[in-house]
Image 1 (tube, protein in one colour):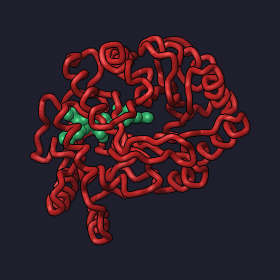
Image 2 (spheres, rainbow, N blue to C red):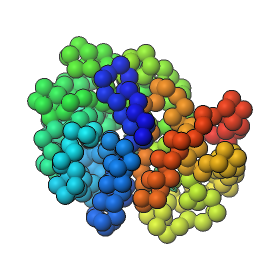
Image 3 (tube, rainbow, N blue to C red):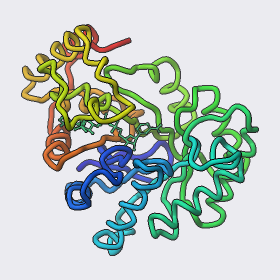
Image 4 (tube, rainbow, N blue to C red):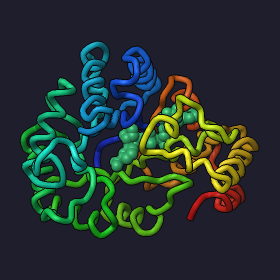
Length: 318
Ligand code: NDP
């Protein structure tokens, strides 16, 4: 594993981090979940990303992770960077969603309880909440740090202006913004329209989620079918309609470039997001140990040439 510094902080993150959004809820066996997390750690993936509502049901991924902490990871707590988030709907009523101090701090306590941890390394506001003053939301993150319940703080899904402002407010509170967590892949390049510049200018790190576009940038669907155990078949977050002719043309075009480089499509997709220094880590999901191992092997690949980048642009969405 290679490690990259998160912005101007002192924290290194692995080039590939593992997220437990899917595959770590109550519908999967603990044995398969345990195998993936143990293999990830053995491969040098020292960062595991969670959120209060990962599952299903909500909270289940943190509970699963808590079991794995108890059975396997507790002796290695100081070798791990664990993150969680609050910001999307989590529990009924007005205090289980949004960006209030009330929601964030009680959610963090619940997350720590589910994971059996005293603190998380990174606590994020999961998405912007324009109905709450940013000072209140950032104040809650700063309080989490002062309480010793989080070592660092981050934001996710914030636009460039919101990111700059969040960094400014947190600086004023003496708690620097460590990192931004945006979506970035060959199929979603929105961050190239200003967010990566904002991240550079503010000196924060970035960890990009869904770099494989939830599996679309892998060989999962290249045959045109939707495997019954795939995310497109089983999750409400990826619809089967995404496996369209346009998709297949793009994905197969990219897979051909990958093959010329001796890579799989998934590996090319990871090499591509990690080509930028502004990207500290690519945050992947995996439903098997084999997927994880294939993805980590992407780090062995040579850098992309200007010619390859130009050819990728023909198929990658702008
Ligand atoms: P990816 O884009 O890496 O998609 C992961 C999925 O791709 C896997 O579940 C698997 O699908 C498939 N896959 C992975 N590797 C391979 C491979 N080598 N060959 C074939 N298929 C493969 O990321 P996710 O969408 O899972 O997101 C990663 C993490 O990012 C999340 O767990 C979460 O921590 C974070 N995230 C944050 C968000 C935010 O708002 N902050 C939003 C979304 C994600 P299959 O299950 O079909 O096998």
